[in-house]
Image (cartoon, rainbow, N blue to C red; front, side, top):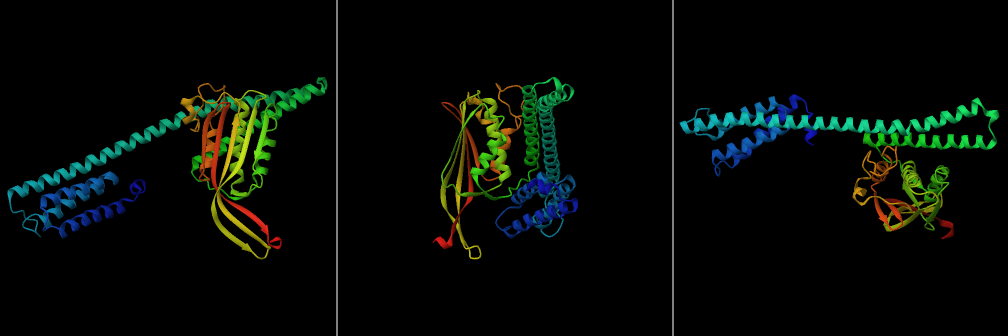
Length: 378
């Protein structure tokens, strides 16, 4: 709200400043029989101070001058004239005018100083994030690119001298490096969407069985040395979600688990419905079906058999560009922050906890569900 007011044009600031002073004075005038003119001076000074917090210096000085003239004309004896009856009141008026001006100038200057400090801190933070991202990407992008170039050079330059097994290994290296490169690019694009602040999930009916197995297939190479255990509740309803965002959420969690857990360990995926309450009932006569929709919670958990997370760092893992102190070389620190952002765009929550055998991520999303029943069978 304050930011929108500070961006108003000078003319609008003048009008609002004058209106606020006039309104404050009018309120005081209606009860002038019960309050002393010195109390009115304090109220008008407070009004000028509030104006100075928000507006530029010229409207503030205008408000200070106007408040002094109104106080003199309507509240200092004799009223309804600019003549001041006593030397004491004349001194009070002079002091009020000076204090109002100084107060307005100093308050405005303090606000400007705070704004400059915030802008400086924001700039320093941007530079720090940029350097962090640049350092991370210098490894994360160059490594798979170098692997792809090396493998393709070997295939092209001396393909006749390579055995079929060697060719297969080189193709696998290209595939793994390509997936790694694609993951980093997707994370960068996802983070740019989050930074823009304009993520609006495009919700449609999603089959969680399809989504889970699609992600598993995409990560076939990354997960080939792990045992994947999938547990999806029977008769799971369709959820109204953004398929692309949720696919990226599960992809990032499983990709992280494949990297940071020992080979041949187990990764568990559990999906269940946590019923809440009936939401609405639609009857489609043309399609001869009844659609009952409810607002339920979709619960997804991903557990691994790894070393877990340092307890003192669990609260930081979802921060942008944050990397664990014992993390492997490379990595941009974007994966989990994207998970958090995409889940929260669905009004959901994601939590992390250490369990005896490793780590567990739990996602809970309130989502509309659908049960479709053929009317002819009822």
